[in-house]
Length: 104
Length: 154
Image (cartoon, rainbow over all chains, first blue to last red; front, side, top):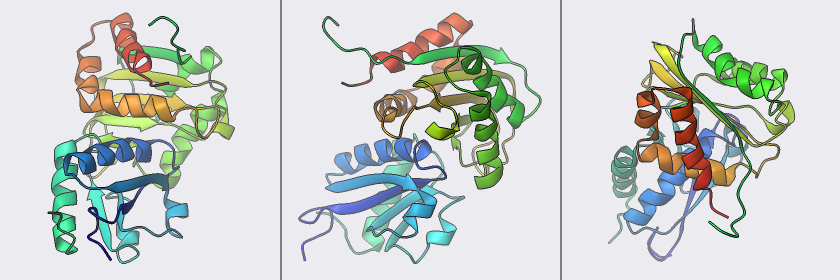
């Protein structure tokens, strides 16, 4: 198995209530941040009920939605501000390190 | 741009709208789009109900709410609306209250809006919220929204 985000593409889910609004905003921000961090990631936006049956390396949603997903995905990230790349970058970098996936 | 296929989007924006609470704010941002026939009254109702059902997750950033419902709830056209509020209101969000900018979008299917929202996300990251809040007239705010539409990719 290669390093996550380097040899192996990270599978990432962004989720929101309906699955077609705020999770798309979140996906855009996440995609830009992964690019800036030099990580390979495939980001999919979905609704929270579909997300319960899906697999991914990283799950990203608002703090209102993340508690029930703790333990369902290796990494669960709560984001307050969906349009703040700085918050997203810090949280993704910290989560990658915590998961032992620290990129080069 | 010559020869470029323009995305058709029903647009409206209003500034400094007085509202009594978050439900009123969502109805106020929907009303002109209902009037224009882009969305139905049911769509506006569903925008409110979704927050009752799923919580105020639509407050995507400090001060900014992005209301919407599903295509089958009464989205007739691709649409984007915005209002800035005369006085901010609380949506009950743990971090991002109070809200002073309410956006709404509608999409006739599950795909048509993806490019529009990508452009909206880019513009919001680059200060669209502040520019809308600074807009002194409805026309100025509508022009800011038009820039989002103009940047929708092919």
